[in-house]
Amino acid sequence: MRRLFPVTDQTSDSEGARDREWSLDELADAYAYPVPDGPRAEPGAPGRAWLRGNMVSSLDGAAAHEGRSQPLSGAADMRIFGTLRGLADAVLVGAQTVRSEGYRPARAREAFARRRQAAGQGPAPAIAVVSASLDLDFSQPLFTEPLVPTLVLTGAAAPPDRLRRAERAGAEVVVAGDGPGVEPAQALRALAGRGLTRLLTEGGPRLLGQFAAAGVLDELCLTLSPTMAAGDAQRITGGPALADPARFALVSVLEESGFLFTRYRRA
Image 1: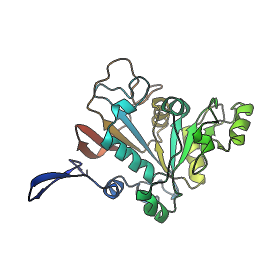
Image 2: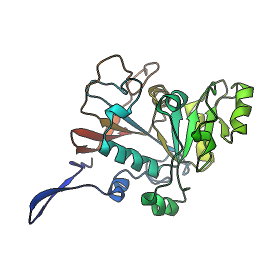
Image 3: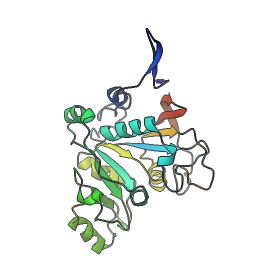
Image 4: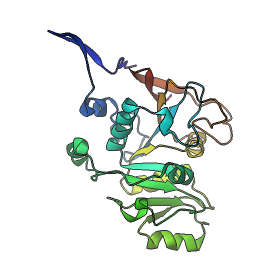
């Protein structure tokens, strides 16, 4: 296990100790995706997708406060959030999260431009919205102003009129399920077939729960926020319980201002 603890280094100068903030390059190295044909790839599948989740939780297990995750976040959390996006080919997100969080297109960031170019990636990750009903506002910037086309993942039995609306809005529709909804394994294969193998999901909890239940979640980056939310907010995963708890191994821990930034891989 690699321990990255704390996130700031204590250095000395003539004025005494001071904190040094990690650079975005250092964070990008710490959170780099595995090599596609490395030891974690499935045998015979060098182009296999790697799915990473990124979520935040309060000390008492809430994934959001009043429907949004932002109140649980902080400056360092947003730096890691941006780093994880800067490394991804595509960001998968559930339709409810798109609506409640006011999702916008991912933007190109100069800090990651050279790294993305060297990896053969586009200027920014594609946002891939997972929705069975396609009950989405296609007039929003996520669909009208993306730097790279927004993807909409749905099932073969999705409402045909809404499929046409999505396509007219400029979204790329990806059918990844035989019924009305998306089947996680099919979704990852479909994205990998488009060359999108470095995948990140930012939730919501139901979508993350579906990926976990299907056994396709490779890694979880979990921020433990030094906050208490109380109430009845959902945990970071939702949906039916797994028959047996999935086991993950701790990879690294970072700390800043009481926030713990943990990284786990499927054991």
